[in-house]
Length: 165
Image (tube, rainbow, N blue to C red; front, top):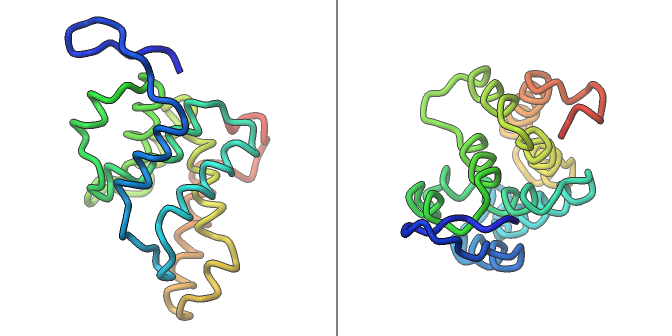
């Protein structure tokens, strides 16, 4: 990742992917997913999904942080000041759902942000993993499956794989 200016305007070294991972793990410590698993497992799976799909280091960093602001694990202020590329920050903010935001607006923001679609694709893939969904009750499983299918359609994820970046 290219250096990000510090508050004084001087370039500061960017956080390495390992540092971003450690920050995300610490921020989500003690948090679990809907199945009761440590939340860091989801973050790791999304980051690996981005890597497998050909994502770059900025997208992988965003994958580690994709839920941090939304879940109040890290503040938007922290993100603004973090030694991360502008692109990584933009992707994280694009993936941060806003209260009461219609899915169409959320999808439009993702599509308008370079690199965000690929990260959301990896997030949806892990969220919709049949093994993860199998441990949930039928009503929750059906609701989430419908939600993820709709978002994939809004993002056009059933089309040309080359367009996903």
